[in-house]
View 1: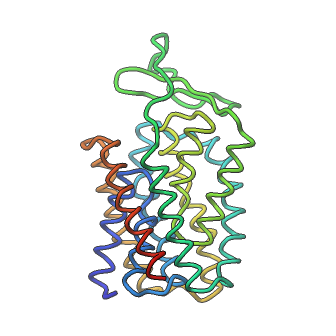
View 2 (view 1 turned 135 degrees about the horizontal axis):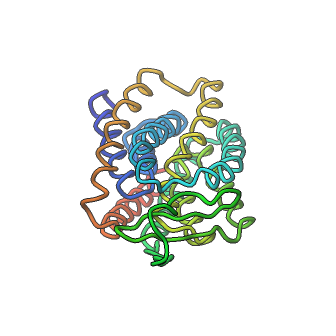
View 3 (view 1 turned 135 degrees about the vertical axis):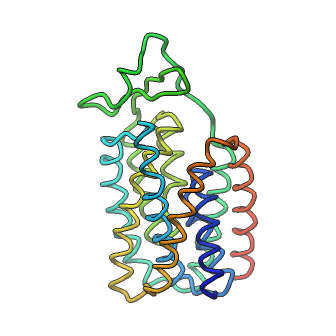
Length: 272
């Protein structure tokens, strides 16, 4: 893929991925593989895109006070450890098997992205802006929803951590990032509001990506010029995507992204 096409792909997938809450790498890595790039070199670029999107979205999400740092640290320890294992193992997996893995990951992401639920936690009229933030010493808090305030508390922590470990393993193996697993796990398993789950996942997923990238670099799988181009384009795309979140209905975006992922997944498996 020529530099202009690579930059455009990184920008577009970062914008769409941030907008849909799944991360741009879930689109970028399959597209790169379909364009003819070897999966073992596409995977590191996917993690670079993940890290760039995380940096781009973080400032606005922090200002909105929807990131739960304690929850992020608790889940990221498990995810990063699993990502290290996945990245080490990925060096021994063949090109064809990696392509099939990417196809399966894309199809699973399409399924979960398409069926994700909306708001689970309801506003509490007794809460005010003073209550917004994390509850000290717990995995609970309050986040603003329009002019109302919604309380939440993490549940089923062991099962949730297992899901986060799977997210990290997939991220290390395929380079697609684990946001598409982390967000549904936090929302559907741990009962964290989708808005908080997505923001916390986006805020921390860059750490998971960094762990995988260290291993990829030791294996000589990172082309610095391509990585720099993807990082720059991903930062711009992620910034655009996080701003567009306020303009387009999230269900519509997720359904469109899920359809695209399903098509990409089928193509990867058929053309392996």
